[in-house]
Each structure stands twice: as structure tokens, then as C-alpha cells.
Image (cartoon, rainbow, N blue to C red; front, side, top):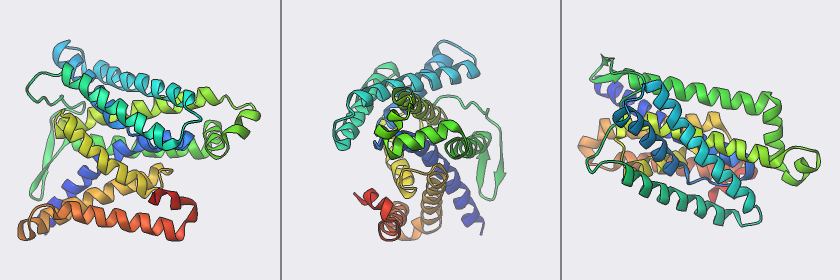
Length: 293
């Protein structure tokens, strides 16, 4: 039971990392149906700015946190402007463009960082406590609470505010929304900037656990994409739940059974869960059948 409890805790916080990265992808998809693969690069860039401000400039953690988030928002706004220019392009081409941005940002981050692998300091300090067979850090708790708060606020904004009404209108019928006077450009750039800010925040909160390494962030991005797909790329709440479920699957299966059945089983369990979710969406919810593609 102690092994199971420890594996569940590890998986829960691992899933929080995936969910954080997934929220920004859901935000950008909700405005103009583009699968935003630029989130990984923005996360790495925001984390690099945060590390540079704290480790090299000696800025206070709060100032560096704001700087990293703003850096992500600026890049995200740039992607939003690019999306407006490519409005007539096939969505698949725009997705590849965002992946290109990720690779370019990875190159910039690798140029900024020193040759040795670095780990930014946590915005939540270095405390913690022991639970079962694992040590729960204040960073893990802070990241989890931040993720839940962001998902709740994003869901509330989309469902209950005028901004959310406009975003849903643009998502459903951009031409009709523009005809009704909704400022299309402002909202597209604003939502993409928000997605970039979320990616920058995710990078800052992820890298104290995974190290600031672009390759590791790319793998985190893959599982974050899986989490967002479980919600049809449209629901912040389900993307959060999807990330937590994938993390729990990896943590529990890998921690409890990995030693007996060999490594890699945790990834297989998460893939099976994702495949089941996508299959269910295609069969039971025809409006989400495009996610299978």
C-alpha cells in the first residue's frame, strides 16, 4: 500500500505537469482550430528567461516569474498575428508552422543556456514533507494548485463572461462573428498571447522538476498533447483531468509493476488510455470525431 500510495502521488504531480502544458494548447485551439505545437518552444523560452533573470541578473523570483510569463505572451501574440496572416492556409500547414517555431525557439534556448544542464529555482521555495515512501515538495503542491486554479479560471471565462461568448462565436463561425462586430484580430491575438503566457508559466513550473532541457520538454509536450486530445482540444477541465489520468497511469503502473515487468510499461498504459478516450470520442461524440485524425 505504501508503494501504491507513493506511486499515485508521483503520478499525480507528473500529470499536473502534462496538464499545465495542455491548457495553453486548448486555449489556442478554442479560438481558431489550430493544434498549437509551438507551446513546447514557448515553454522552454519562458523558462530560459526566468532562469536568466534569477541566476544571471539576480532578479527577485517574482520579477523573474513575471518576465518569463511576459516573454511567453509576446511570442504567443506573434503566433496569433501569424495565424491571422495565414487564415486561408490549411490548418495542418499552420500546425507545422507552429512546430517550426518550437524548433527555432529550442535553438535560441540552447544558445542562451550554458553547456551544463541547469534547473531553475522553484517559485514556491524548497520545503516539503514525507508521505508514504516519497517526499512531497512545496513546488509540487504549488504547481498542482496553480494548475487547478488556471483550469478553473479559464473554464469560468469561456462559459460565463462576454469574452468567452466572443471566443466561442469566433470558434463556431469566425465570418459570422466578424459580421456582428466582434473584433476578430484582437481576440485571436489576445487568446494566442494568453496561450503563450500559459506556456511560459508551464515551462517555469515544469523545469525545476525535469531540468531545463529542450529534449525533455519536447517529451512533456507529447504527453500534454495527449491530455488535451482527451478533452477534444476544447475543454480546459477535461484537459486537466486527462493530464492527471495519464500521469497517474504512468506513476502507478510504472511504480507498482515496472520493477516486475520491465521499463516502458507506464508509457504503454498511458497510450492505451489515450487510445480508448479518442476511440470513445469518435464513436459517442461525432462532433469530436475529427480528433481521431
